[in-house]
Image (cartoon, helix red, strand yellow):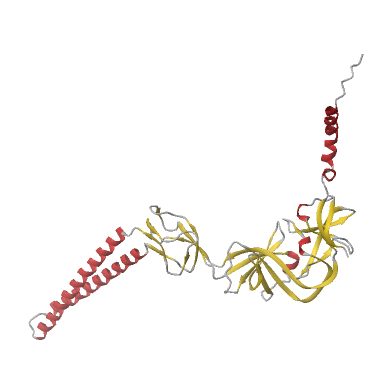
Amino acid sequence: MPINPPHHPRLSVFLCAVFLMPLLLLNPAVADDPAPVSVAMPQQASVADTLRLSGSLSAERSARLSTRVDGLVAQINVDAGSRVERGDILLALDPAIASLEQAEANAATAEAQAALTETRRLLDEALRLREQNHISATEVATRQANLAIATAAYNAARAREKTAAELLQRHQLPAPFAGVISARLTEVGEWVSRGTPVLELVALDQVRLDVMAPQERFADISNKTTVTVISDALPAQRLTGRITALVPVSDSAARAFLVRVVVEDTGVELLPGTSATAVFDLGDQQQSGLLVPRDALLRHPDGGQSLFVVNNGRAERRMVSTGSEGQQGVVILSGINAGEVVVIRGNEVLRDGQAVTVIDGNRS
């Protein structure tokens, strides 16, 4: 005789959850609440042909500084973040041995100077005696040779003295240009060798912006193209840029080319490492298409772009091809149709097929 298990309300709920869970996992949209989004209706418009590319600012000049001689670090006058001028002494090595070598060189020069003075006196004396025929010509010639030898010895001593002075001076590390110390790589008491970086110095007087131009627009850019740079740290300012390099070697992964822009406005201090946007003016031609706000676009690591449209209450991802960009927005060349509503807020976390609720937007 079969035994019927006792009916229990909690057991029934548990069994329902077990059977429904796979269905929810197969269709995540069923389990999610509608996502709130803001939308806009694309407008047919013409926009001047421009190209906006984002990149990172870097210093036009930067250097990993090393000492000019081997030695023990005795003093460090700067730290990371210190601003320096050209010629400022950044670091000093222990000069004890170099000071003694210079003192020895100075003494050798003084000895050579005394010997030169004496040989010159002896030659002058020989020349006077020779006029009175009190000394032989051979003796005069010998003293002339001694003077030449003493002169050479003095010059050699002077050269060694200058070498010792230069070596002593090289125990100090001066700043080769004005800037800010970005890294301190040594401490007092460490032994450092020539070629080993001890400090990193970055110039702030001029920065450059490196951007990657897509392959289909690279041919439209030249060294004469007008460029405006907009720093993300100073979004209200429009800075003048100048193209200094076009590298015609493609990144095979992104299918893009390097364009280097130098910011020419010296009155504005931009920090290396921050992000900025280069706006390239590609001519007076107008490009027509569906204009959408820039916030509607989502950029992909491979260089592609997409956006979401609202279709029957659900988000639908569309891969799009973009054209000119202006203050009003971006021209969409393909991927959407007139009359479709695009998501401009809340699209960062949307999934394809997810239910949405429009909380703000203009459909007209």
